[in-house]
Length: 325
Image (cartoon, rainbow, N blue to C red; front, side, top):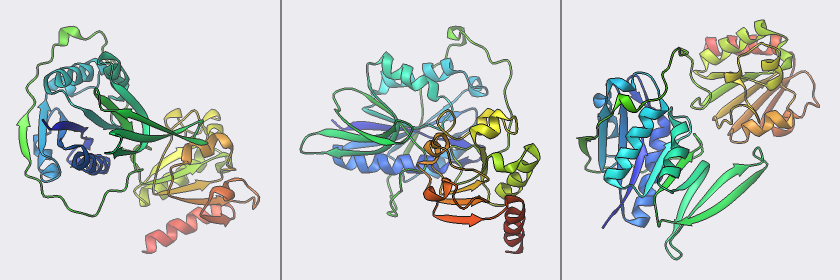
């Protein structure tokens, strides 16, 4: 009997987010090694039309639509995943750490006594030992932990975004699309959302470009310049702990040991000295560009490119160059 790998799709409005394709690529590579089907779970209030973007990339797309998914409650997701797992018995459940609902996955693993990995950086299978091997960052990114487990029970694996490089090979699977046949019961919910934050900004977790500021931005007004640069680069804005503590940015923009751990393609550090606390949050960044007046700032040791200069002179020139293109 074939095993089953399930991928939880991440989407926004009318598009499947790139992190979903990263997960599907990894799932397909594993499926070839362990003889498994790849299934994608698409959740939302009105998501059926998005299934066309997944055709050819997996064996089966399961669609679940329900008005209860209009607002996020972990109990809603908990019900969905528990009932799905009870009915379909997935061997591996892959989900990105930027998906809303991530707080229910540790509970899901505990409910089924499943293997659980958070912050997974890579995943491979050794057919000779029949072991899955994973790596994850520990100690604020200063070390990498390697672990192994057998597929003797379900595994719930949460991955870091933008750490997997999808293969260029195009897949042409015959994809079946079905409705996930489970029912939700509102009476089982214990909590109720009373307010929510509406934002049109790209989140730190999914952004391919992040522009971040520190003490060198000198105040909340300085961050307006960062928003201008990020908007032109279709990126997100981040901040150091010092900038957040000073009240220049909300905590949700904080990058570092007590903030977000990010893995963008490009990270632009503006007026950031480069404390260990902050560097722990950008371990996964592919290319780091630093702008700082101090040529001896620690951030330059982590940078691929460095600009020694005043951020209030350099950034407007960058914006002007981008606009001219």
